[in-house]
Length: 212
Ligand code: ATP
Ligand code: ZN
Image 1 (cartoon, rainbow, N blue to C red):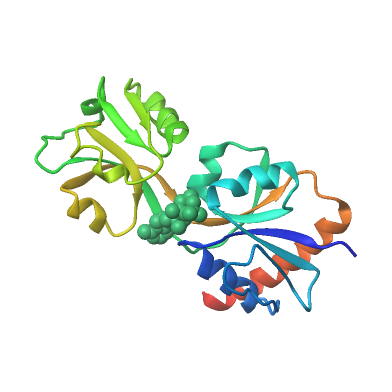
Image 2 (image 1 turned 120 degrees about the vertical axis):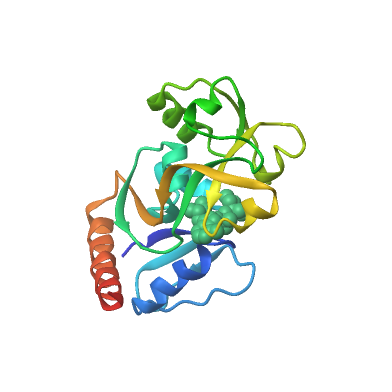
């Protein structure tokens, strides 16, 4: 029987909970340090450990059959893949923030301003629905330092507690989207792999129900 290939973040905020979920489903595997792949010994599953940003593309291309990513990453990359399960962990939000000393009354603040973000597509869509035109600067990391170095008047970034914003002299002013980890799947899965995916989701549902 062919394996269900599952793409999981190699190291980061999704990794631990993603691995824990499979263990709680009774799926055994050995993931030694720095390995790229791991095979389960008791379920036809193979794990691929990747950067989260690469997961939607690999699933669309069929390199992986399913994957776990944040909804923020799923939305940003706009790949032709399906969300098959909301997983309830890695909850966070994508928010707009500005320097603490700015007078902010509403979204019109951003009209004609420069905004730094790693999520240009999500931000553009959000600003369009609000009728705001801004200059979006895509940067891949350390977005929160952009106002301090004069790159942008505001940022759009992932927030959970808000402590990173605070320590960079920023305040959160608008929520763009809420996010949690989701399981995504290739929309062109074979019938055989669909059966495996359904078995997996059945186990995940029992695990998640046990937590409520
Ligand atoms: P990679 O090296 O794989 O590209 P990364 O640095 O882009 O990793 P992480 O910071 O590990 O990504 O975050 C992965 C995902 O976890 C985010 O896309 C988001 O959905 C979620 N996340 C990010 N920050 C938090 C947080 N503070 N609390 C909870 N979930 C978060
Ligand atoms: Zn990433």
